[in-house]
Amino acid sequence: MTAFMPLRDAIATFVNDGQVLALEGFTHLIPMAAGQEIARQRRRGLTLVRMTPDVIYDQLIGAGCATRLVFSWGGNPGVGSLHRLRDAVEHAWPQPLQLEEYSHAAMAAAYTAGASGLPFAVLRAFQGTDLPANNRNIRRVACPFTGEELAAVPALRPDVTIIHAQQADRVGNVRIRGIVGVQKEAVLAARIAIVTVEEIVERVTDEMNAVVLPSLVVHAVCHVPRGAYPSYAHGWYDRDNAFYEAWDGIARDRDAFARWMERHVHATPDWAAYLRLADVR
Image (tube, rainbow, N blue to C red; front, side, top):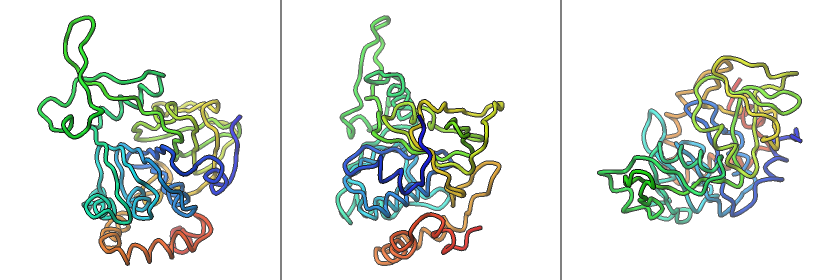
């Protein structure tokens, strides 16, 4: 049965040090509130998995929460680099960060394999690239039917997947509207799934091209309005481009980053307080 609880309690209950953790969302519906709560609770030794790590993973890495990153692209979208990620890789600050890099297609295939209960995924990929030379988990296998050589990558099975969505009903069914990435596959591949939502409604209804996750795969629902800010939630609010531009300057300097995290995350009790401090309406 899906549990309805405050985000603080969901993170405290389900997210532990040393876990493999996926926070997925593509362009919008990025679970920013959940990521900040993980940093607020000072989790350590995490393996962070994400197809497109952006600002929230920059915050988690800079806060010392992660020791390993499994990913297929990383950056501050529309702006440039993730400076806390780069500092961890290039200078081991605040600690060393191990990288395991794939392509987008390989990440999607690996999540799908995990969701399907398969040990690995097979795809045509990586010819002419140097990723296999830098990632020992990219292997080659022969098709048993044609003999064709294909790429193979291990299935992704996070301990916990966290996503943000527009709605959940009172049973725990979740609806995602707009652009989707691998949220469905990441939830189905995980041992535990936490979903933060903009609103809770009586009943989630069918809608063309909407993704509906049934309550039986959702362990916790947390009502967190504007939980994807500064990314956007289709039909609810727009992207705050100014925040992403401002983050570039904040994240470039270790002291500026530490001051921002202390004031906006560690010194605030929850996401609602952070939004009030940031004057987000």
